[in-house]
Length: 394
Ligand SMILES: *Cc1c(COP(=O)(O)O)cnc(C)c1O
Image 1: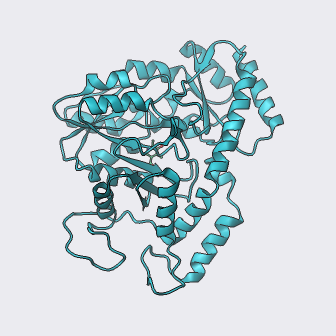
Image 2 (image 1 turned 180 degrees about the vertical axis):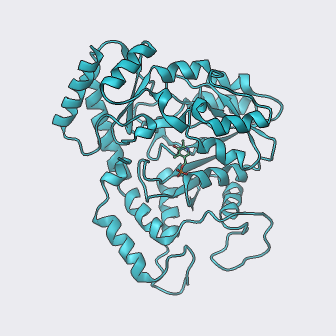
Image 3 (image 1 turned 120 degrees about the horizontal axis):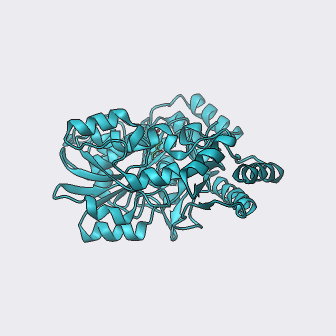
């Protein structure tokens, strides 16, 4: 029960993978003079930069490693604080924790993204950056978040792992802040099983991210040593096979998002007369991925009742997407003098306990979106799901 890209795996992905196997080159670096070397990772990076309208794109092994490379590229140092929403996947925290950074949590608003009004209250002399997370394919309120960032001279790392294909007022997510990290995991808009990428318009950030992802090689190499290594890096490289599949998926991204938006709009129309809930805020209704439809009920008991009637659950029960459910993160934060417990973010707790995620394209029980429709659902199936939902609300 994955993301929409997996529903649309086809001969394009298969042929691309076979082509790479036949070429004999699986590593991202190969003999540039050998016509058999297909340069799939380089091609993917070029295509991603074009698609995202970003100066630079770097393919990585996962969204987590894209986040880690991005935070490293920003030059953040151990002890620096980064403001992160209390509702996000665990990797938004763990990636920065492994760099010695301190994630400082903040409330979400009814878009289920970082609440711009809560950021300023979390700023201390150690705050260096903000990480807006475009959760559930829905861009955050970026105008207001960027205004706070500029006012306080904070760096912005956009976590776009759930939002490939999303845009805000005509700009692709990931390109409004200093740097953006995306995931190509199985549960995301498009996928290659695992994988990820970083986008930025800043050459030096790109080069630092590149070095981080390739054992510290700066300047970039093409497989052979170039100059000294001034950075200490790790290995977060993508390989040719994965890149070939990702390229085939990237070509489908706009069609996937268009299809999901159409289905989401139809479902919303069909359920909008039911009582007791509203839809989450879309900061740019044209830019949301359409991967999920989130409904926010008037109270938590109604949300629990409706979701259980449908065999689903409320968003506060969605495991390691909610700060209160991350015992390991809470234990770490406590150990560094940042005690947060269940209940530390009452605004977030309240919204999530009243929310239910209906799948449109991402069918993921872990996200609390085990019920709904998928990208291949027919209009008849969408009508049937809508009827079920309306009945469950009565
Ligand atoms: C999936 C996800 C990640 C991590 O991506 P992986 O590719 O699984 O490492 C990070 N942040 C958010 C918000 C995610 O949903």
